[in-house]
Amino acid sequence: MVTSSRLLARNTLLNLLGQVVPMIAAIIAIPVLITHLGAARFGVITLAWAAIGYFGLFDLGLGRALTQAVATRLGVEGNADDLPEVTWTALWLMLALGAVGALVVGAFTPWIVTRGLHVPPSLQGESRTAFYLLAFSLPFVVTSSGLRGLLEAHQHFGLGTALRIPMALVTFFGPLAVLPFSTALGPVVGALVAGRVLSWLTYLIACIWRYDFMRERLRVRRGVVLPLIRYGGWMTVSNIVSPLMVYLDRFVIGAILPLAAVAHYVTPYELVSKALILPLAMLAVLFPAFAASFATDRVRTAQLFERSLRVIVLIMFPILLTIVLFAREGLTLWVGADFARASTPVLQWLGIGLFVNSVAQAPFAVVQGVGRPDITAKLHLAELPLYVGGMWWLAHHFGISGVAAAWTIRASLDAVALLIAAHWLVPDATGRMEKTLVGAAGAVGALGAATLVHGEMSKAAYLAAAFIGFAVLCWTRAIQPSERAAIFEWTGLARRRSVPRA
Image (cartoon, rainbow, N blue to C red; front, side):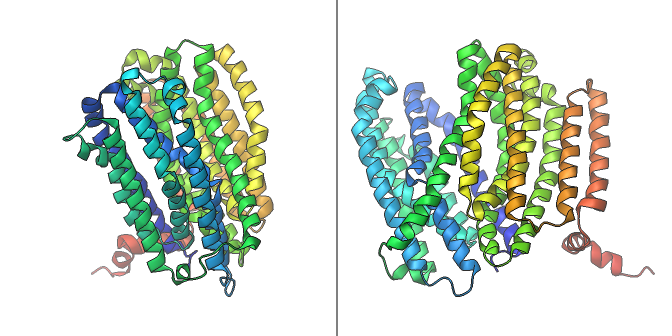
């Protein structure tokens, strides 16, 4: 069953592994590439990595639409007859969009290199070659997201992770393998592109081998084109506006405040945002589960929603409380006392905001999983002007701390709106949902109070008291009896408790 708790937990760990490995590979590869390529060439490589990531926008949300459509059909017995047409229609559309994107990128490459990026004249020839290679890779990158979405719809994250990890290694270690022979951008980016093409071929072979329906009816079905495009179109709105709200703050800071303030803001942001990898890994698994269960068992959808909220609160609160409480000490050790003095309030505001944002990921996945991406898109469009105006005013009056506060306020309003929308779409949640949300509100209060604690001994005492209270509440109120029994069984405590004393 694609919505069983054991399967979802296993797939979450596998998905998390697939996201952690690229981070480790980047940590190893980046210093070597900087040393051998130099700052200018490495700058083009970072743009290549970013471009490959953002090239996914050319699929117009069809990868996510395919995952939702297939998962919904799998959730309803006897409703999978049109899986071949749905799958191949989406893949052919994505291939066409990728080809159009390749032509656009190729046509604008001369302008991008000479004017858009102001590449030094000595590197313009190499950079043009690099961007032409990236344009060539675009159809493969776009359709790979569809094939990966097909695996996710079937909850085959084990196979997906087994394919994803080598791709991540090639992304960062492929350019390293070229360095003994050449430091020119053409061969280095060529290795990166070759890895992407090989990854696409591997995904395609794996899907055809794993799913019998992929071997038949390789055609476009007109009847499913419009639903796919409608869903994908709303997804694209969110995919464009959401990153814009993520990165707009640093441009506002650069326009209003001294340029050094950008570094004082971005550094803590990049640090704390890495914690999102945990809820995002889980909700990537739950997205197709929400779609599959909603088609036949909405009570199960509500159960998965409530449990995902609860798990996020249980995991994220201890991590972010530690970060918020010891923000100054941690930054001082990492980047020095002067830098920490300016960045500590930012890290604390963002830590609180990230906790709220992590909670919002669950209703976000529910709303899109049950087939209403238009709600998240409209919400983001409504938030954008309010966010920009509020951030501009707060930046003028409170500097980078005001910008961080604006981000947290926006994340809070977004979370409330998404929770209301999710409850409206999935009204079968039990009373445990209310307890979870009350607990989340209490956690926000505890995070806010942590910013007022000063002195290392006071902070240590606060952390100890908060952790003890949190552990007691988790065990007595948050964790259900069946879950406690599962914990005892997993740790072996149940067997020890059942053995009579001599």
